[in-house]
Length: 138
Length: 138
DNA sequence: AAATTAATGCACTTCCGTTGCATACTTCAA
DNA sequence: TTGAAGTATGCAACGGAAGTGCATTAATTT
Image (cartoon, rainbow over all chains, first blue to last red):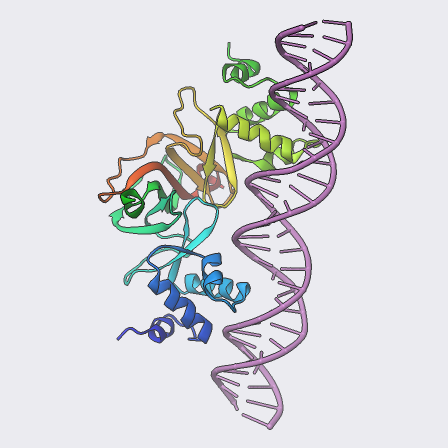
């Protein structure tokens, strides 16, 4: 049983009320979530607390940070066996310019990139922008 | 002869003093440049003017915008035959986490990406972070 | 229960991108 | 050549987002 509390404790994060709520929210949302998204969802919430909650999640490997090129940092829960870095994970992200949602495309594997001699790649960020499934239908 | 003035007039941009200076600066810099970079370089400069200068350059196809994932918009001159979009161009960018410079890797071609049915890709942004050539030596 | 550590909430700062508006400079037509 | 229209510039200010400092509260340990 992988309940909310376990997810936190398994990653050495103490399951406080706020953290459980934020985790729940992230679980329900399929798309990547911004700090403001979370803040708006909870009426009586403090921006800083949520900010630090998300930061903790990223540091402890519960979620990862997404830079989708909108200038707003997004967060998404890691997959079961996610090996993402602290600051970025390695799958493709799709950002819909219509509904403004960003989703993780985990089944797409980023191809190996050969750089010029002397360059060391530590992290790859691949974002495709366009129109998503849902918006395309409407 | 492709002097500074020609670059501007060829792209329907009037060659004002400020624009020539900014263009010169961009030409000399090999790496991608932020608004603040330009601002700091010119002592007696107005942020807004430079901002609008860079914006004009992008709109007229003289330079392109780069989102290197640092959260700070960068600009780089387009290549001779650059077919970049207004908001992004399509080659790989390398961001060095040590010296904080971002460079265009124009010889790397972004591979075709096949998305799930219903998704339309309009733009692709590929950023590799790591240690650059120069920093690696030192 | 006291003391230490961790989490939270509030206020505030900083940074970047952006806009509004008034002034200066060009261009062009009468 | 003058005056009107358009363009560029400079100053001030706004707004959003990330991040910090500090005091308060809650949880843990001894």
